[in-house]
Image (tube, rainbow, N blue to C red):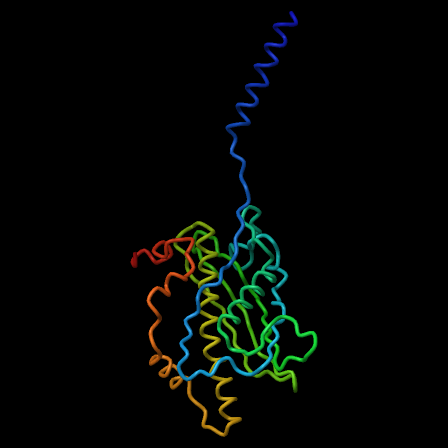
Length: 254
């Protein structure tokens, strides 16, 4: 074969390979994170921030879920790691940062943080996560978050307040991002509910120290309902949702 013809065929072969490679779709990993959304906690009779020093311990996450890959549950007996959909940071780190931000935004405590180097905190806020996953089967598509949290008094190591939840929210958009958004929504809702209860406990503790009668949750909520409405334009500070809420609604609600 003449040298010129050989070089021509070789060049055409390389060009054909490049064309094929150029049209090949290379799948990339998608990274997700739960986000902090504005809390709806009216002031009312609340006296927050309360004069206590509170330390947030790092969130403990079950080993099954504390990994880079999102976990999909196919059945009660089978789970799958999703190699293409991963967390931007491990759930233990991600949830610690998220809950820290929620607690800071709630303004329950006069002094709050992860570390107290020169002084002892009055309370320690502890969180344990037993499930953070997506259901992905023919029967259902849903987001599942389960955790327990508590506030421990450091004077006697007794639990001052505790709560837990195990929630599963159906998702009608098959995209994994919709499930992550649902997880964010669950955490926001539960933070609001838990912080209202904790607000009441702390308020009654302060009132007891002053020799005043305790308030009920209904009384606290009623006083909150009488609080001034949000200022115009405040909604501009809301976080943008990654997905249209209508897509997460049940078909009959669309």
